Length: 89
Image 1 (cartoon, rainbow, N blue to C red):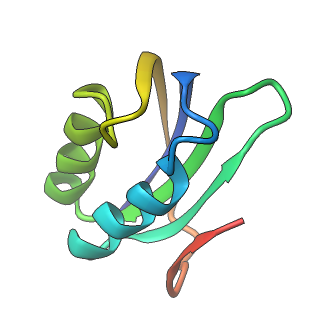
Image 2: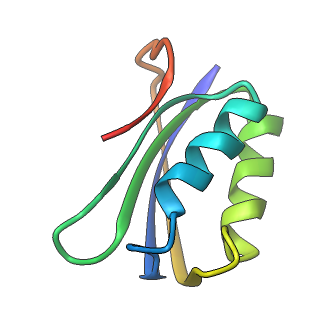
């Protein structure tokens, strides 16, 4: 199990990005959280199996939900923290 810290910039607030990310992460069996940041970006911590994390990243890089416009995705790997659920904060 690994954790990825992901920051997504673009038109990602007010377009159901957090709810869509939660749904996608849960369908992949990932845990963690997603939240809006004051600078207009979205911050995600997701942990689980590498293959599932890569699928989440592919979904994000493909643009996420239909109304969103993803401009940049930054990813850092970190030690897992043993989240139990995938939450919206």
